[in-house]
Image 1 (tube, rainbow, N blue to C red):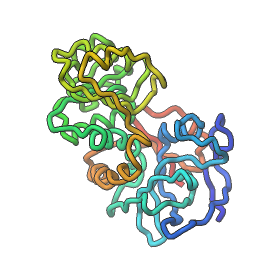
Image 2: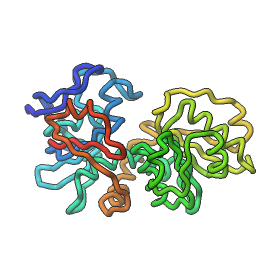
Image 3: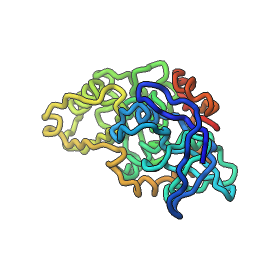
Image 4: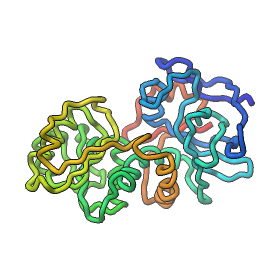
Length: 312
């Protein structure tokens, strides 16, 4: 079946809109869907550049990690892309029906496509990796990014009693819905976040290392448990971590991502997260662009606080 798709033929160039031969479904668990909306997430960009840790290096490829599609019977579904199938940035694609959730009537498909990926990281982290308890305090490192802004909403919806938002873009820290917003300086973090229970880290690198030691040194009771959940690495893929950080405090460092939580675990969280988005419990700003203009959309700087959604 010939379709139109955003096709990556080189990891150092944006995808181009061109014809593509879509393989037919191979069994009864697969179906062809008309793609309605697909998010251009940072995770999509890293996959298309071959830099994501799950990349196989195989080309050509159609990028994307999730989307909204319409089944032959007219039902709208949210789907998570299968690595063994063509990606969702296309007019049509093949989905694994076991990785889909039917959307409620009237759902805003653009908002679902925009919000699911950035919300899923913190949603799964606070429900599967370290289930948050009502009233606990949370520090979000990288709070001004799209995923960080969503994490502030997620933490609040899941029962956080106190939220500290920390980021490099101080002009965007206000209005995030956190109780306290602070710059990424050791003094500010030591004062505002020394007693938090959970850290959601989208930064890693030197900023996270500095924040980690500042928070640990400032704790009044180092035997009080601190869970650090590493999700993103926008400030760098590595860090120098002094061994004393792990010995001198009740400090637990773990990650959240593909592999840290099973596919089944992620899929189990989709219905409740979709409910939050479609009911307005979680909000996201969106910018739409035609899929046919994917090459130009790919190279445009992201609008602050907005997620780009491509629409066939």
